[in-house]
Length: 142
Image 1 (cartoon, rainbow, N blue to C red):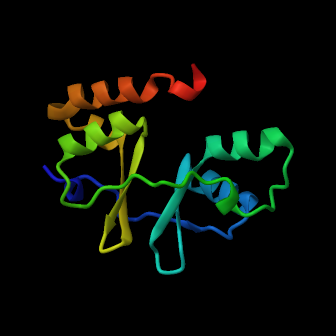
Image 2 (tube, one colour; image 1 turned 120 degrees about the vertical axis):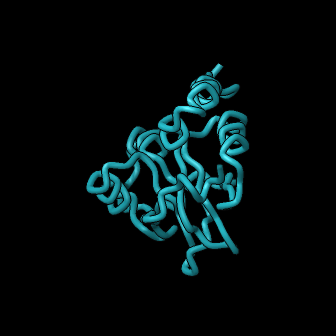
């Protein structure tokens, strides 16, 4: 099975010059914990999570009108729609991430989450293994 078969295609992204306040409000209204950050041509350049907002902005007493590009995680890990879901689970585990942007021809076309993998019964063990690896403390926190 390929990522295209399970990915969410209706993905809202934000731009690097969006304010942190705007992004937080979008996350709240969409009930999501992360959003891809794209340039003007819908090319992903990073991802911002609720955790990024808390740790890199709010906890430091910074201005919530600051641009999200200043706190996003860059070095984006992504997959193509043709990526096998087993490979995607492995990528998530290796990089300790719960969501993978799906990129085709340099453009954001979807997103896949660990939950998307977990709801497919035949992949539940792989998704569980990936989630276990994702949930391990990173070297930074040890």
